[in-house]
Image 1: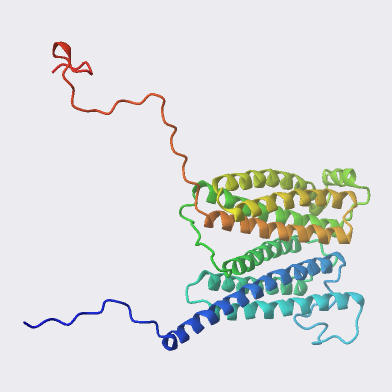
Image 2: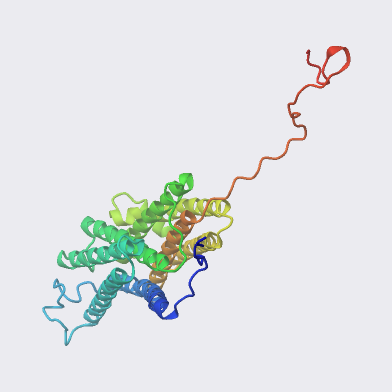
Length: 369
């Protein structure tokens, strides 16, 4: 009788030489992603002083420091001599130019590190797009003369679009940095339900609030308040006043309404996502920042909008916007809380079974056989 050879079902021992390239490749990929995450966070943080310095150009009325030339400054690549406002405007352009290079490097890094279709790639593409739009809006302001003492509706509308684009740029950079971190869960947009709609409304409401703030800041620059809050309210209600003066009264009202709504949505998100520390942290951060921002707004009015307070107010608005974006993202990443089991009723119906024989032909349940 012939016997079949025994088959060894045990796995072959690992070959460290063959597995080394795969391990090294995975390790290099992980290192590249960590470096990209740190770089994307740096780019996000760098954009904050760039935005604030842009407001400093407006407040100091230095927007015409390079004349109507763009991207050149007074017809020169590097102005050798000039006034203080030329130095301020050119410094802002240098900061913006460096920001453009950083975002371009961010875009290239996302293409190199992450595969096709990855959400980090998409966020980096939007970051580059909004950066280019930001530069185009800045050029439009300079070339159309919507700077310094110009109080036209065109300037107000363009500044409003500038604010919206800036917030969208910050949102794209925030998502790039957040999604580049390891272990981020995919968004559950379809399962967001009412919470997803409420968070989207909170983002839109914050954009509206930001636009009203940008218009109000322009009015404070062109038509300074000399007598405090009461005089500002009286001027806003004066018939025939400039539209930038009349619009100032609406910003605090919008801020209070949006603040109440934001606190409610943040509390709701925390309640629906009890297992997510990130939702709880960003919800609390958004609420705290909004309270601080409300206080800064009233202080800005009480001090009659000094330059430093306007810059602080804008910086807080940018940080608040980033926190609301992260609240929305983490709430849509986290799984919803499982519904609580129904409470056991005190009296439950007996389990149906075959009737047992009883007295007089009745089962013990009283049914007729």
